[in-house]
Image (cartoon, helix red, strand yellow):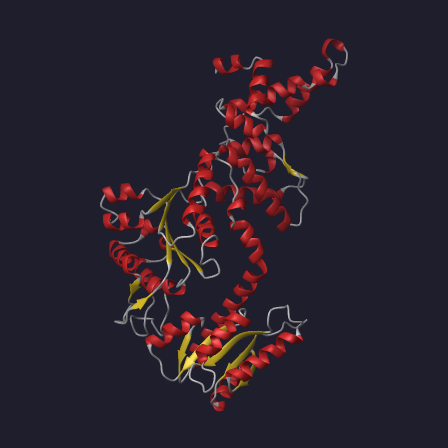
Length: 485
């Protein structure tokens, strides 16, 4: 079965230019059409939309448009596309290239900006980039409802008191444009919290842009954030809009800000104070309206004291601080998170998995998780892929989790043996209620030991209230075990 090629429309009042671009892209495999005005383009797009029933994404993936056209200008066409056909990605071209015009086109919604005469390779690369963006837009449209559920505060997993306090801070700070600084180890969910702030803000419908400063070489980070102009440095073959401009009217999340060099820290201080900057190689100043959230996986106060992080930048970004606890300090949340990931990964793998055995959950709760929530997610995914059972057992977990777990739950065969002994005490079967007391005693004792005799955490793990736990401890005289330990 042949795969439909992406459809590209070229809009230019110069029919020779439109037809030549259409022919060039057709030669490299795109399904193209050319029109000579914005009005013609919208009519053709509407016809295509009706042809697929009106509800499906528009068959056109990319619209290459001239910025200078009579009647409806390129900017007007881009604005109309954003309202009526947001899944179509605009790519702007013009014979009068300036930084101001490029900024205006990108702010309006164009993914890129090319100047005439268009170079074949530049056009091909720009269209490939636009196609990738269109695929992402289509996926985002399909997953918007799921994303809202995932990033809505009511659906972030965790009942630990510290996490509940974080949710309160997020709800309080989200409506404003206050700068937020998050501290926490890698994998604790800083990106998730940043997205929750964005999703609950007034700019939720605008762009959320995430940059991991630690993963970008220092020599490229300035260009990545602020953009550059053609010829600014070796390899700068075309103008590039940076992440600050891409996040204009939305949210920019700068992760691992502790990795930024002193020079970059100074530039960030200025843009955070003034909301303006110059692209690399340009003297033109660009102003942006962007909400900035920052995160560090190292304590910034210690870096400031060691002279590795600018004190003035630290005070500028430390307006509202959120400290995310590591997963090993959120034992009561491990079961909730594990069950959440199990449901998610089981669905992805098309498997029917009911839950975890008691031994498996005990092992998960006793592990320290140096990789935090992200590591737990990977552990559950691995278990889902490998298990042949309807429940995740301890044998489905990675060896390092089992070997390094502090959980002391009795093995299943020992529990069954105890249950059997209890039922046939004195050579005759006992009432079921009495026979179940010994296994219950052992399970409660194992949970207390695994939680270092923290009654609150033990009650949460066993899904009983604390009063019930105290009664059971007294009933089975378990305090003696705790004192002996």
